[in-house]
Figure 1 (cartoon, rainbow, N blue to C red):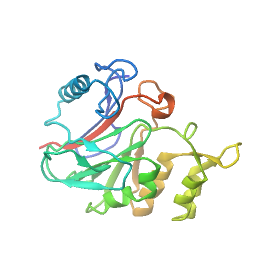
Figure 2 (figure 1 turned 45 degrees about the vertical axis):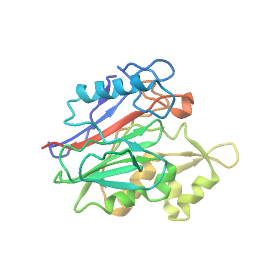
Figure 3 (figure 1 turned 60 degrees about the vertical axis):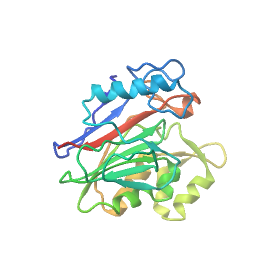
Length: 242
C-alpha cells in the first residue's frame, strides 16, 4: 500500500482525486504514520509536516481546504480558499485548483463530479450525515449528470449499530432496510454504508456510482476509529485542474 490511492472511476482528465492511507508520514504511535487531523491529540508540527508531505507528493496545485467536521449535513460552496476553517461535512466548488478535502477513520468519504468536470464535491458521510441528507444537500448544488466514488470505509462485517439507526433510515424509505443485517444478538444490526449511500444516490438519479470496496477496519493501511479507538485520520481529495 502506498501513501495514497487513485479512485478507479472514469471522469474528465482535468478532475483529479486521491484518497490517502496511513502509510509514509511522520506521526508516532498511535497516529502512525500519515495522520492528517489536528483534532485527535497528535503533535501538531507532525500533522502539518504530514499535510505538506502529501500535498507535495501528489502535486496538488494548492493547499487543501480543511473542514471542521461535526457529522452534520452541511455542504459549503467555496469560490476561493477560505481564510478560516469551515464548519461543515461537505465542500462543493466550481473553481479551478480548489482542493476539496474530507477526513475519515471509518465514515464513508464520497467524491462527486459532474460528467463535464465543471463541478465537484467531497463529503464526509457517516450514518448521521446519510440519514440527515448530506448527499441530497450536495447534489442540490449540481447541474447535470453526476458521477460518484465511494472511498475507504468500515465494512458491514464490523459496523454494528442499534435499532435507532435503522429507524432513522426506514422512517424515510422502507427500502433502506435492505442495507442492514440483523445480528444474532437482540436489536443489533450490521450497517453497509456503501450500500446505503448507493441507494440514496440512485434514488436522486445518480446511477454512475463506483465503490472502492476498501474496508478501513480490516486493513491496517487505513486508520479505523472502531478498531483502534485513539487513532489518526486519512483524507479524500478532489479538485479541478486548470
